[in-house]
Image (cartoon, rainbow over all chains, first blue to last red; front, side):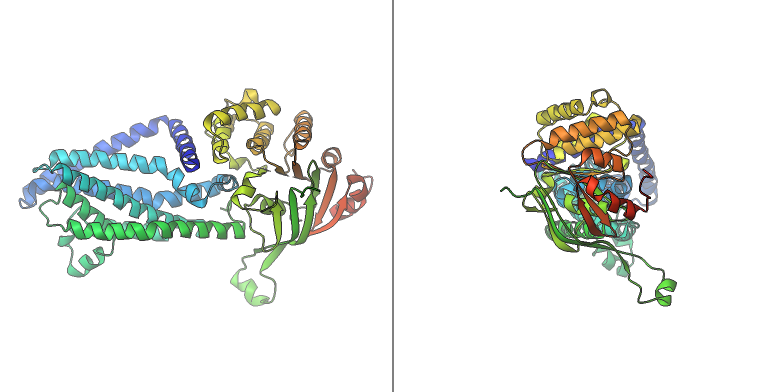
Length: 267
Length: 254
């Protein structure tokens, strides 16, 4: 109950702050529509050049965007918010209250993560409309669940990255490296199978590869590429179960260290 | 005899001091840290307003932050209402007032800022609304409640910091230069509010300031810190000569 009250307080705070930037929502929405339009026409070109991949490219790339934008928000957002609170001076004021480090890091993410999930929902909705063979309800549920489990893994990685940010003040070593590698190798814009064999092996170590595989297997948006949804599911679930508690422990340790150093409001 | 709400024994704190490689090679034995507190004992009884004074860098803010739980001590122990300082329940018992204007959300109104922090202290929505109104009335902030924080005057911001600290009805109030930006009228209202508040059961306040006149008016007792050590304590009049010596001010110059 108390945790829900804290979460709602952060959500309300962030909604009020967002509402004070009135044009921001419109810019975000127009950016989303422009990206969908861009990839629609790109997909038409791909259909002409690669008839084998053909009609499947549009839903394939939209599912890639849904996951990669969610990953970007989770990987960079936690660290960015910790850094902003440090420089704005609000971090110390918030941590002077009785809330736990887990509440302090997770609650401010509700709005931005919710927005990223909603944007992803729009991409996936359009992708479903463009999928030639409509998936069954069970496939849809599996795909949605894969998306959420993938989100949990990215949240854990984002919290780990924020722990480093709290200690190092600058830089986002974990988030920046992982985001760049994932965008390149995980199959956001092209299937992993087009990569050279050594890079395909590297891709198997990236959570986004499995998140995309499980999602696409669920919604039939593989773009003609075979996917192993079951294996990807297992890997994602194990990662989420292992990384979430680990990341929260790491953030609590980082907060304790910052309290020891007196650096909660350093910049 | 009831336990004192605020007790510290042998508090020590030192900060790492980053040193360039050249300086490190030149004098490798020089300490790599700065001693902020070097074994401070204090006890603040219920209904007491205790002043904390000392030159810049004496350790006042470090002491207040350790008691508030936002800074961990390297040695010694501090207890708030019998609980280890920094524990969640101890933080619930503390109201911290800093002069750091950055600790508020500038795009939110004063009311929304207070509501947000009230929720973090565990107040339900309706209770938070009522409490915000109460503390605003107590500090003469009613007219400022709907204004964005960024539009408030410096004095109003300082009053809002005190309002935030009082929201959850803490037992211990820790104030770091609360009257620094206040005009004489606002400072007088703050003193009155503090005096009324501390009369509540089991409450006390520790009040750091450089303003000797303010301490003379507000504090029942004064602690004098110098270079991380508590060098004198007692009623203001009895420690004034030592305080002037520590500050390097000639008697009669004030």
